[in-house]
Length: 402
Image: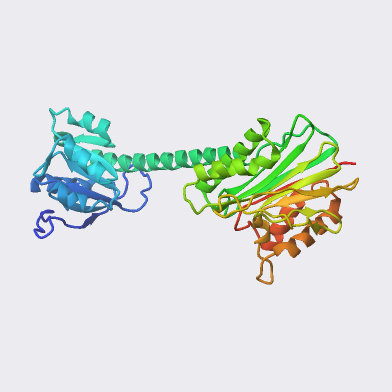
């Protein structure tokens, strides 16, 4: 057998040795093993052990730690702790810091470095004087499997944490309406876009002690966790200000201050629509901050008047937000929504737009009236789009139960 360290130019040699597992266990393809050993005799011994062992392995050899760091695209590293350019545990620590996969340490008989190496991050250690083919093969195979299990556990942990964060965002974005009046119909709905990634849409509905009910729908421009967190912050700020007794006419101005303070970039803005429903339920004041105009649900649905539309929150231009008074009939329903619904694409390749959404709302009303209207609208728009929407979407329906 040739010396595995005879390739002087790079100090490495690629070999492959194959044997059946004597225990009958299946082996999942060759394990890519990097042997970091400067002693030609010890390197040759490792190669011979693996020739005799029950393992399918592709070998790469390196004489120094510097050479090893350049060859870490492997499944396992067999590391001698006595190298020309690194000695003891610092060699292992440098290798792990460089991104090494599973590491099995080779140590001397009288050394306590083996246990210390495992504590420092190695998967296993072998005493050189006690190594044979079976023991070496078992240590390498188990090290690879343990490393894979660790990576799977880390990935599972990350997914659990991400799911928990998404749930926290969702609870903040999607609160339970705080309305005591049983005579008032309140429905809310939200669908995350882009395969479940939360966006910046938010809503809330709260009844004041005097019986006035305020409903809000908002949309932070952009997508992703930053926008979702900002939307949750704005929604919480809105409810906090409302419960603190701040006048309705001042809410948008104060929420805008929160937006400017908390947004990660100065170009981020937010659109919003807000309704203030009078305690006698005979009128409603509509506030618009650059947001799509709500529908007065019919049939047929019609767009509410728009001549007092205000600017979006966070846009550095003059102008405020003034209420538009709408007188209500004995039976009435108002539907607020975000533009994720308007941007849904339909079969013709264009967007649904306001006229298309109005037709969807009318069809949903014809199918069952106010009961379950929000969910029917969302599902009908998704069906027309052909699946999950690109952008997230939020809806709020308020109206009389009489």
